[in-house]
Image (cartoon, rainbow, N blue to C red; front, side, top):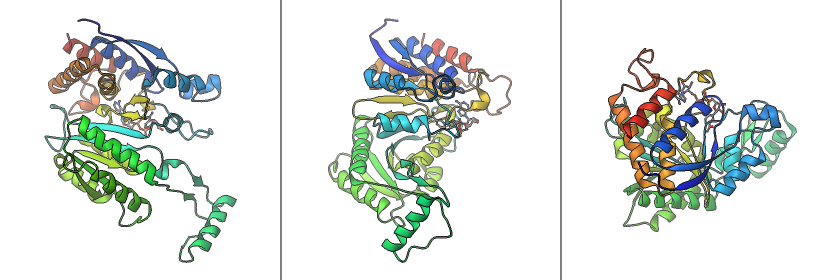
Length: 365
Ligand code: NAD
């Protein structure tokens, strides 16, 4: 196989199952015929013990420099100043869009036969903005007082904890435009905006109104519709094949991406990317599954498919096709797959992380 081009990519192996699925991914990408110059930097619980922070500056610098990164999952340490390394990276690098294609590959068990969704989640605001006030804190009680002054009808129970949900026209315009551009690029037909504007008239109402405005720019090229989030959940379970590209505010996007991951075989096969204007960071939807750390048990598919998305992003289309076809072949055969893809999760014929990567590499030869 001819090696095509050498690209510099930041690799953050992560922690928990991260290093195992990262190694599997590196091997599969190389086998697809692209020689990457990997710049490996570390974030997560282990580096925290050494450097006192789970997200050292050299990680951010490396991603900024290389513009392309792939990351294993990182555990969110409890009790540190950090809410999450993942959220911090997205904020620091202004990765405003989370892209999660949810495609059902033949051989993987599901409730429907044809599921090929693309989830576009806003990454920078909503209840995920991290603006929270603890119950009984001076700040929360002050906020209650101020809100009562602003809205005498507002009712609170005693000493509530409060989270703030900012939604802006600017961030919504940016994410909805990203969803439409993605739809065009991926040759999709329809964008569905998901919201709860019937109840949250100002926040989700603004999201919906803005989405409708942006949709006008794409009239005649891409269809547009909207759904209320609870109804969307039911419809995705009953008629997933009716949907194409979904665009959602941060929190609904988080929840619906996991729901859709469940529809296509589980977290073990759901890839993703966080994208900004100039930087793209690829990562699986799943977390660090600490209970499987070092056991060679975790499914590497989600991260390998994230690598496939990265190859497409850098224009290595042939290598991406080769890799995706190999993954699809291994999934269809259903033999060399990890425990989560077996009918019976205790099937002794399930293979380990590195053996599944071996099978994918073999399928490319
Ligand atoms: P998780 O995704 O790590 O695990 C949930 C369950 O899903 C696991 O117990 C396992 O049964 C299954 N699973 C996940 N990945 C799998 C894989 N590759 N192969 C087979 N089975 C797999 O979610 P969690 O337990 O809620 O989170 C664990 C840690 O990961 C937390 O600290 C959380 O903050 C962090 N997290 C990180 C990211 C990220 O780095 N982007 C995303 C989500 C969660």
